[in-house]
Image (cartoon, rainbow, N blue to C red; front, top):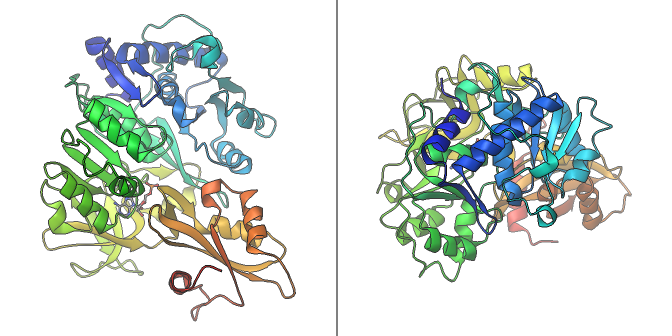
Length: 512
Ligand code: AMP
């Protein structure tokens, strides 16, 4: 079985001087530089005492993407486990996540280093905070770890790992209860499986997904495995994205729906030269039909697709045949073998063909699991079937449609926000009796976070003060933009909050 690092080495041997990755307005690296620097960093990690199977956090600003990629390869070469870490977490959230992963080391940058260093006392396993160079002072290229790490040796380095060894832990949520980290083994870390087959067409794949996400981490190796070089835009800006497409003429692009919406609304969208794009995948969250239509009509020659993916599902694909998107608005394509799909009702019974049910997925031999959370693993994967929590159906031709979410996740501009986490923080406030958090439609972000709160009798507190309370305890994107006070929450007979009703009321009522 080939490791991801085998692909990099093969590319470095065949195309060492060619560009492997480019960061928009932020430098580039060749396959040779990537391979050599990750060998050097891997040696340095082992010399520091990072052992096989130890967890190493990759906690770097988006603009430090090249160092992140070098770090990702180096962690695997050191036989350690990569923990890509969300850079927007609050200190308390970061402590919970890195504490759950029991990380030995954090690879970070000068900007984020104080946050990481602040945890050294609280986390007994954390022994090394490795901070990349201040490039403006040292003059190190954007991919180099410079003299931050000792050692000159850049020749091949790989601690032996077997397919069952852990490669990555990707955290999907978690400020309450046990954080959920999807544990990914070397046998299923490659989203495009296969042996190294170095080729390079000269074309590129452009994306803007944070590298700590499922999509972003996949885009580190996917381009080279398809014979492309990668281009990463660390801060999405629609106007700059259009310019980059005109300058670099990418063959493949990936967007999340909110980025696609910003592009469609941009004054230069109608005239920009987009003809190089052959595949435009849009996914990670529900995609508005109008956005898909506008993108496909603007790029009639390209395959524009609504792409469904999930960290827990890993390399499970649906494909939309070229030219079919506009005939199947709302569909995410046809499940590709060996992926199998079933739909079940609340009791776990299969629903009639074409009916909506919870989507269950199975990829024999490629199942993932939760790290140090056997209860969640057992309830999410049953007999090899992944219970996605999404609601969907198949049409008569076998096309999959995702129609909603069973579980309560709000996807705000591509960031997953779990209502329970915010409800817990609101409940922490002494004036709050009840709180329910829901996603409400937002024209650009897809969904925004709103809360309805019931105060204890006689309590006097404003929505702004409650927001402040949340802002002190949560990452900024999780803070409810809208907080409404109510006398009571609507509940069903068994006492569950009727969130659909809340959403309807919020959408209909003027903002107070
Ligand atoms: P994550 O694991 O963070 O990528 O989140 C996965 C979840 O995002 C899925 O379970 C879906 O609820 C949602 N999702 C991803 N892609 C789509 C899509 N194309 N349409 C609707 N929902 C999506």
